[in-house]
Amino acid sequence: MGNCFSCLRSKSTSRPVADSSDNENLDNVPDKRVGGLDSNDLNPPVMAMSNGAHNAPVLGSVGSDNCGSLRSSFTCTRLTSTLNKTNIRLNNFSTKSFQTRVQKLFDMYKDAVEDLILIDGIERLCSDLQMSPEEFRILILAWKCDAHQMCRFTRAEFLNGCHALQVDSVSLMKNKLSDVANDLNYNTEEFKSLYRFTFKFGLDNAVGQRILPVDTAIVLWKLIFNIREPEILERWLNFLESQDNIRGIPKDTWNMFLNFAESVSNGDLSNYDDTEAWPSVFDDFVEYENDQANQNISEKGIGKKHGSVL
Image (tube, rainbow, N blue to C red; front, side, top):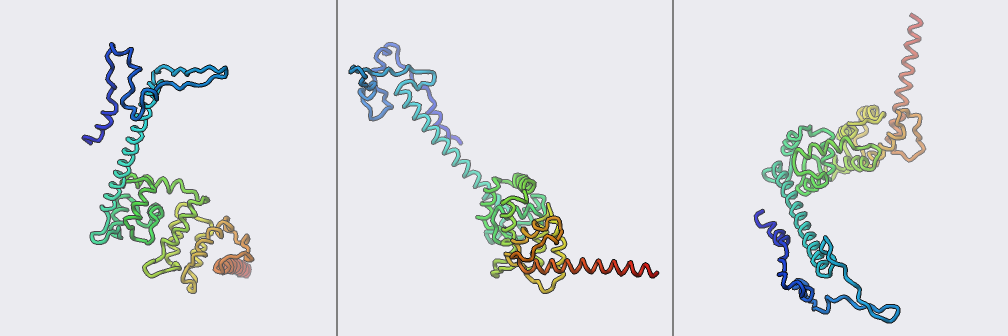
């Protein structure tokens, strides 16, 4: 930074003091720093008074802030402008330094051939973060990066994610991801944004996939509800695993599951209204659950009857 602040030093140098013998004529000498002004421009304006007389307003004396006269005011304005420009340069320098550090962070984990962070790089990054690639905080990282495909980060995605998190090191990233995970409220639009992103993130864009395979959807549902699980989730996932005819989860079913889980928040399916515009798979699930409940009741009744005979 040898010459970076030389301009500040020159701007802050004190103005030379005039010889005392010239003090009485000092006000008649225009300030050379005020370009384009002559001596008449520096005289106070004459204003007409209500009685027809003319009067020149008296300029205040120079105060402790050196802004009491026109020359001092102009000097302060120039000083303020200089400081503002200096702050802009320092902010730009800080921004460029941040971007440089993030670029280097990406380069630590990127593939040797492609300009991407692929599976090996993600595993090394997770190891340095002391996190599992399958845990919720890594999903948050992918969300902040707005990653378009699992198991890879482009340079632009990674840079955008670091900017969104305001991190430029592994240690800062680890702390910030933990903070976001702890502060995330499941009833906010922020979580709904993460939830919607998760469906898109799970698709295989390389083959133009538009529907999540059931096994992928189950993994992602378990992942996104890792911290707080809806009451109905386990039964819903068991139902999906038991149905060979359900092979994929469309986007509307994924998105509507949040509303469905809220509508039966206590796990009581008697609150379910099948006249509403739910995806048909929810109707099938409720019917399946009712059949399971009736079967359990019947089995209990048979057991009691056999018990009485014995």
